[in-house]
Image (cartoon, rainbow, N blue to C red; front, side):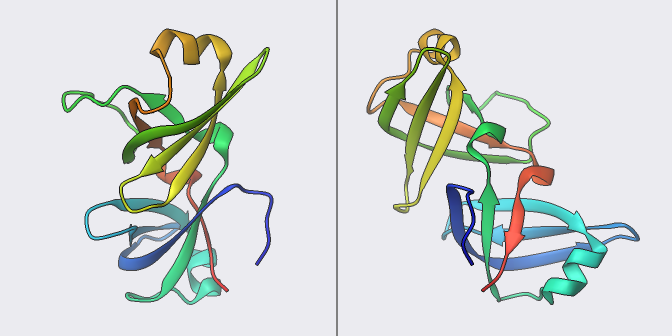
Length: 141
């Protein structure tokens, strides 16, 4: 499988909650972190998903929202992964921020340069990546 999506995290399916139209799939990123994906029932059946199989969680860098880690932060995004900034590539309009997660995975995130400045993003700073469940695409080899 090759795609243009930069964020590709290998996960294990932990649970599946089927509904008439969509299926909520919970994924184990590592021992601590989980991701939730909501896909169509048709996609769920086509992929042959079941507990224990490995899947790739794919998320476009422009669909991730960055926030300063705060346990009291309430958001409608189902997924929150926290790590430290390992690289910043500033641009005139957008800035690319790469966050190194605790397990060695990394996330590339595209934010406006103004937002990067407001958040005080610099190398080594902890940040949380917020991802809606509907933005997590699943893929299998």
